[in-house]
Length: 314
Ligand code: ZN
Image 1 (cartoon, rainbow, N blue to C red):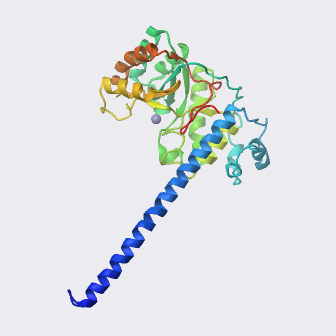
Image 2 (cartoon, rainbow, N blue to C red):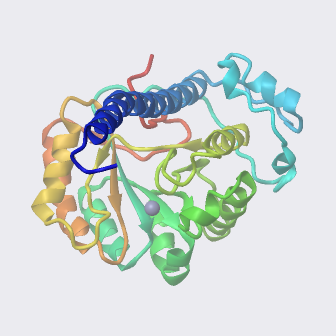
Image 3 (cartoon, rainbow, N blue to C red):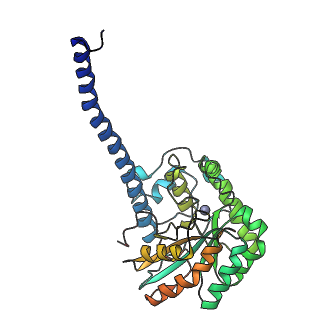
């Protein structure tokens, strides 16, 4: 076929036609699938919110698929997972007696710090103590072994110390429900051993649904709820996870922007050794939010949960 021949142009037209028709179809299908997945995740977390808010009954000894089905009997069918439940037999002590939730009226702020404890923890504790307010620390294992004193100081001062993850290694912990439980149990027992108490709450590494747990998030969430634990995502973030990324003023501004129009805010910030800027921002954040009428509380199993896609307490 000669370049510039009639046959060449005919072929060119055919190829161009196929591309013009096929490209929009491929795009539409791709976006359709993405939207469908997004909707599925949103529906799932809405259901989780509903279950926690309405204190869906948790039978005392759930060991079978039937028990789990009963637990989720008021939920959409696709929520009940009919796979293997070997992991339900693991860690027979790893249960929490979840209390009923109590509505949190008025403007309330839950300050939360992930990934600690660290040398920064003591600075955060000092500020919180100066203001006489309490916060919630979702801690990790490697860090807490290096900073046991800080973890204990937080617990003794009346802050909530709860599980974030032991390893903070996403590919490892989100391999399977078993892998998640192994990591969770390790951190949970460490906190229990050090402080003598379990808060019954936790925060997923990377949030409840993230790029690493697409294949297992439903099973993991269902299993953790079945065991009586409650998880919290967030609806405001300081944006301080990126090391060296933001100034003190930017962190303050992120929090204030995120809080606009919300009565109930769960603020995500970080407590790694690189987060000195967060510690410096904290007094300003507290001053501003207090001036806006927020009171500060700790998260607990009695606080109605906030997950992604949270749209209010209906
Ligand atoms: Zn984290």
